[in-house]
Length: 75
Ligand SMILES: [Ca+2]
Ligand SMILES: [Ca+2]
Image (cartoon, rainbow, N blue to C red; front, side):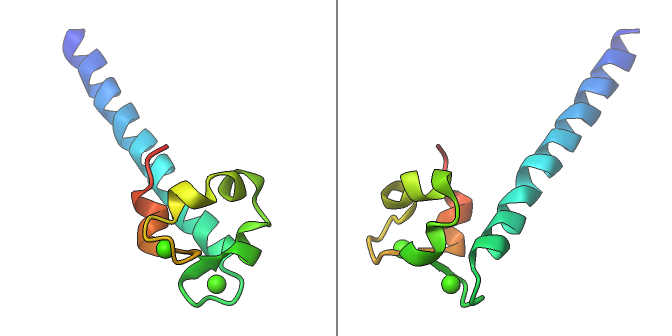
């Protein structure tokens, strides 16, 4: 029985990780309207939450959020 619970927990973790990982890609692609791989301030305005955290997301302060900056962000 314990093994079954452990197996289910692992499966749940794997599913959560997948769900958590994919929306960031989707969200980035959605926000990056001109698809240059960067979210500018103007593009960030489409998403209130991204806008609010823009300065935190923009680690190198170039006023653009690169895909790398977006994906490595931990709130
Ligand atoms: Ca862009
Ligand atoms: Ca940046």
